[in-house]
Length: 265
Image (spheres, rainbow, N blue to C red):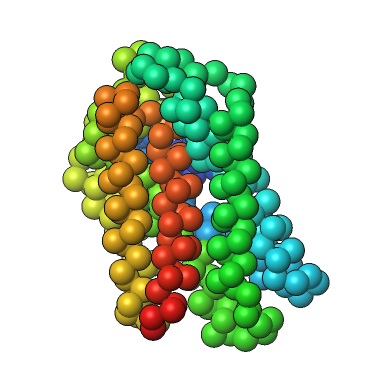
């Protein structure tokens, strides 16, 4: 149990800015095993983001509450995944060979593709979340529970989609220049089962509310399949930035899928 807690806190420290015990460090072995808890970290980020939204609705309208929730979410993760998305936009938008794409993604400066991509990403995310919560009623426990499940599921299943690429593809960079390299070294059935359990459990609970909602796995993992295939085609695998981009795209696909399903249920 002590070792599992250490692995969990390693995941929490690596993927978020949430303070962890002082004895937790970036141990490569624990960081590799931490992939099993990546979707669980999504639970925490989802709860924090929803708490910011819920408390804000007592003072502001839904739109402002959504913006504040997004800000808190980004601060909680240190823009970890948004940064990866921006790097992917720059790399694949400006590079035409594997070496060039990897070189651009490694550059800490953001280019036009990255800036435009992140702006459009955040606009689409805001619009999707605001649409889903447009009828939110302060004090309504049913609405509050649904909103919480929605946030937690979005963050967990999108992280499952991202980390699953580690289980099916190879790491693209041949050197150890990326801080995400230890995650790609090896994995066992524990990482796969853990990621699946923590990634799908919130969706199972949400689907109990309305069973048709489980269908969101289809578009989410179709987008994951498309992105992984695209990365494989151009850079023969994936990088940490690719995982971040996949998480962001999968999260938005989840919101859009829920909006689409609500028209038929």
